[in-house]
Image (cartoon, rainbow, N blue to C red; front, top):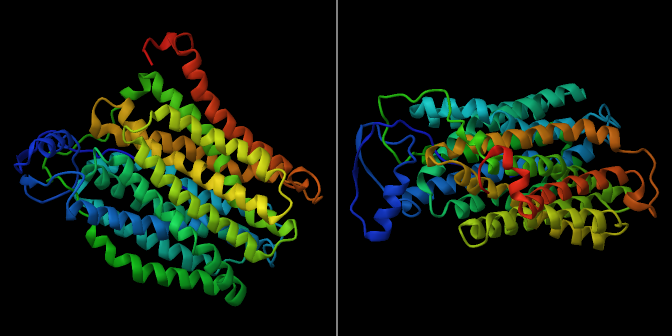
Length: 458
């Protein structure tokens, strides 16, 4: 799959910890970004971007991301299994399970972010509730006997659980990391890359040996035992305040041309991103490769994703121009779709595609954090703009299911482009990625004429 700045009240009495010049400067800047913390109104603010407290929050975010977000991103293995057993065999609605599981977190951001901002003291409670909902959804899905039941449990309910815990974690993460925010988001997001190298193989083995019911219950038990205790590591940097922020977010970024640049690029990227993740395993089996090979391809994508998100996050911290990274990620991904995926009939080119696509396509989401900081004058509102970028990507993700059902063919011709069955899928995913990059290129080719009506310089 796979950020922003934390909300708070304006009247907080603070006593800053004396720091050397550079660190104290960073601390004063980050004091604008506050959230949950000590229960007193007067507290010492620890420095940002370093220290045990900051790294504990990042460690907790890494594990939550790896396990709870990594599972729906490995849904391709479940989909391949479901499509070959009764009572789900051949059901074209199976992709909807995966898209719901990954999209609700994005779609619900504009609703949940003001709640997180308003009720700071309950952020940890929300994290606990989201974790519990994820566990319950997997247990409920283990009893599913229809595709509709899978959509409601493994898809919608699980996605809702992710939504509930994700935004409080982002809010806290933004409090602790300012100058190194790109790197912090890269570390957090790459967690699904590392877990993705394990999940596809483990899930494939478990599904083949025990079936989906026992596998889902086992995953629920694993998440309950491993993740539950980690809720305690989450603590905001700033003290709580008795004054409660308004539920109405600052939407001034809608007046800025850069927001529409990022929004257009992001929408196209979101519409194309998940197709390879959903269909690589079934594509592999359709060309005669083993189920293990299909799981291996997802693992390769995940490993490349980890490297890509760390790299893009590090580079986005004022090391490369944000727009260059925003162009490069989808453009290289588009070329990989049109060539290595479309013309793949054997394992070798599919491996090359998985490496390239995983590195470049997955690196895009890490850039949202810097996009939010560029279009928000008030840094504590950067989370709000991030949620709207996430929302429109969620729209693209939700459309993946019905679009794929309309594009996929029943016939397989191994010698044909996209082996015939997946030709339209390959072309659509590549076209979305290409459009995502061209939006950025067009901005730089003719920014003044394109955005003159918005009366703001690029």
